[in-house]
Image 1 (spheres, rainbow, N blue to C red):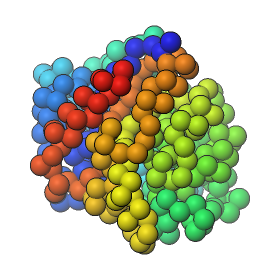
Image 2: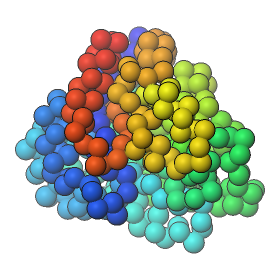
Image 3: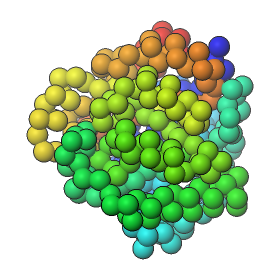
Length: 309
């Protein structure tokens, strides 16, 4: 039997992925609408979106009855020359999220929130190969070791200085995306250093079965993301050479329950495994396509409620 599960959301539901995008909504608007949609928590979003001011952000969260369940490192994890920047972001994010109102704890939750979700990003050659394991170039052994060293440094800093559990998120368009890369990551990063955040939509987009993959790594999964895939749009975008977030802008991610992912099977599996804690809804989009955000979040929440979440 599963433990209690709290469904949260993330700023990417508003199209917040690249802080340089001039069309992003104000972060206070995201908080307003997350609260209005009935969520009690959400993720911090990409580094630089919300201010690194615990007093200001904490006051806004408290006013709306919200908490932050995870911060995010979404950057180049491959380059060892980027390590100082990665560790600076880690320290600043962890200092912020641990000073904010603490999320509730759940029975069955192995590590308390907030988490630090760690994702590789920023490589054109992999971005254009998102979803295509057969044509995506893999890192050389030396570059892979460098990425693992960066991840260990991030995870150890988060754990040892701030008590924050780092969870590694395989992400479409990054150098940790496909089944072979996830398997190697799980071998190279020990459980005591970091867990996994598996994302149903990214697994499906990248050719992995979400149910089978969650089962295979259930002893490492500390946190989960939910999204859904529009099968017709997926077939179209993967027939072209297209960046991952451009595919999202075309609607490849749809409200949960309106796509092809089997959430009944996922509910049964998580019940069997006794998963308790947080699950965050994500539906990446272009921020200019904002008219249906609250409608889509309501549809996802309603579907998940009917599915037993």
